[in-house]
Image (cartoon, rainbow, N blue to C red; front, side, top):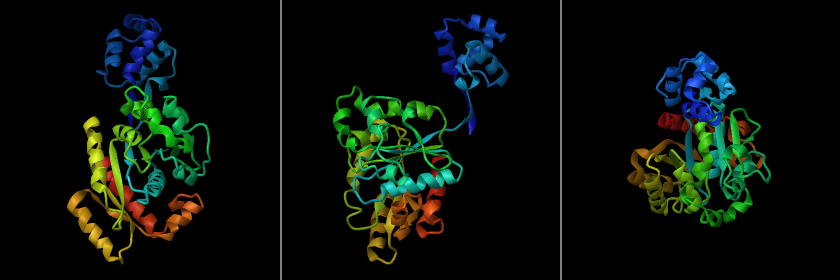
Length: 323
């Protein structure tokens, strides 16, 4: 965590009040050269000066200065095949990171609402579909979970028609990014982790356009690895719009070391992704389904389970990549 001065906001607030830099300097007792440098970001942070500037603008210090600022990383978990374990990955990774002291926001963008249900939420008007359709800032749709450091934006069944709505929007590829921007810039969260639907449509293009990293969970089966080239092509297309987007890695899920298909699938993935495969993997573990049934995070339901140990390993690997 660090500290951040909202330089542009200082200027905006001053102009809204019809004040010149000289007038603000006179009202605060702060030299006009300091006012100029604070508005342009050319000055080192000085709390006493900022406090006087805030008082002169009639706002709280927290409106122009963030004490505990986090460089938020937006991570999308995506695969166009159902059964890859996307929702389980998001649910378990999110809680594991929050349990490690990281501030996490989960976003459920899948119309099935499985992530929302897994954290105990039912249908509610304050959902992602409403925010996108009405083009409202996502900050107003954030909900607290029952767990420290972990918030969520829930989905809704009406997300089934979101593609139709997006195609009517101006600059439709950037709608989600614009709605998420203030939450990212607020520096409240270390990680925003997004669960996606199993399609390669406009919504997921929007989400990748707003992301820093994408994780691809792959079920270790013959069918699980089929069609990956289509997903990678889609991610590459998103990178043409969003140059900062990186493939954090491929996470192997539903792994059964006893089956020969596992080693064969490993070889295929290694040929395609090489070092982009996480060392951690998620084994077949009945505790995963049991935790879902109880609507509890895996490391709450059974912290010593094989799958949870791998999620802890995975979270540590991921943090080393995105730091």
